[in-house]
Structures are given as structure tokens and as C-alpha cells.
Length: 192
Image (tube, rainbow, N blue to C red; front, side):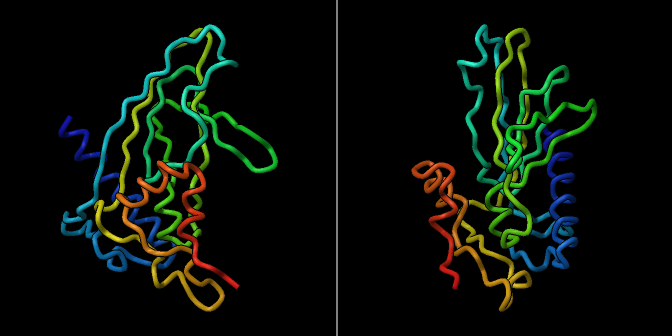
């Protein structure tokens, strides 16, 4: 398990680094994210999700529609059938088909905040199946719980003011537990 955790951390930090570079920012712009020194101080957790067979899947929810609170969630789906669905505006719920050897990466709410909306959080859900038991493993990657996350300065300017105020992951989890998928609305800055 330790080896898996080290590899997942290294892969996720590499993704974070590439995502920051794609926005012409760098790890140096994020005080707590120092992948070169190995001192990122990021908080991580593994979640094992089990979705048993359900004789009436239309009458049950595996995991209701939500966005993740994290920066990134890396998901491994069991092969066979898709239970993960994402919402595409104007289209509806679309299944994310498992690809052998591939992982799904979702941007969470705090990545949305950190990038001032450049990387969108993903509304998704999990559905159950009539004949197949499904398992997924999520690697949830976030900032240190007490570090304030706000839009990176390099991603704000007169045309793109900071859309969100600073908040810690700990505070955001509490806000999300009260306001569910409307939590981001409570940290939005007023814009003209």
C-alpha cells in the first residue's frame, strides 16, 4: 500500500505541475506545492467505493450528483461496465466507460477556485447495476487542510478578477456539508 501511495502522490503531483504549467503558472506560485523538494504538504486519502448489485437500479442511487471538494480526484473503475456518469450541459448524464489500464481524473472545487475557473469542477454521480457489482478506488488529493486556497494571482487581472475568496479545505468541507453543490456560491466574490 505504501508503494501505491508513493506512486499515486508522484503521479498526481506531476499532473498538478503540468496543469499549472499549462496556465503559464508554476509550482512556485503555490506556496505549499513544492514537488521538486518532495515537500508538498498535500493531504491525500484513498476511498474504496462498493456498489452492489441492485435489482431495481432506476429506484436507487449509488452516489448522488456532486462535485469533489478536492483539487484532484484520481479514480480507478473496475472493468466491465460504467457506473460513473458526468453531466454535460445541454446533453445530460454521460457514462464514463472504463478503459483497461486507464485512470479518470476529476478536477474538484478547490482546483476550480485555485485556477479562477479555468479548470472546471466536474458534476458527476455513480449509478448501480442490475447484474454487476462495481468497485472503484479514489485517490483524493488536496491542499493542507488549514492553508487558504484562492485564485492564483497570475490568473487574475482587470478582465478576470478573482472570482472566489480564500478558504481552507477544512472550511470548504464544512461549507459543502451544509450547502452541498451550492457551496462555491458562498465564496464567490461580487463582480460587476
